[in-house]
Image (cartoon, rainbow, N blue to C red; front, side, top):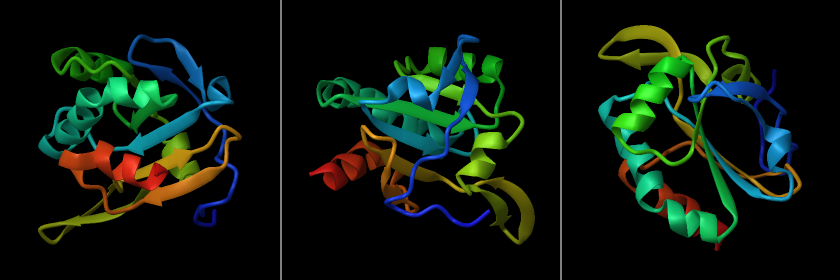
Length: 153
């Protein structure tokens, strides 16, 4: 699949959230969506990113923005992560790697010379019509919300 670009329609998806409920992108038609992909629940960078969205959540909601986090961790792991850090938004379990593949964020990574497959941390901003307006590939985990809000200005 070719790389997604700004201006393209966001790929539709359906997945289970941390409460076992089925969530699809279509449910959020008419709203702006921050769709962020992160490597693993409860790791330092991923926790910093999630907490940035948590700490600024009311401001995002006030602007009509929905936050959806996606990793390949399962529902149980997401539930534990969300509960531990009081995350008020939806975490989607993509255990079959369908969403990460559709969005082109699953790929080879290199950590201290060790190569492996994983999620490349990326944030997609999707408008009310389901169009990708911005793609953030260099995510500042501690300031993820500010990064998003700067793009929406």
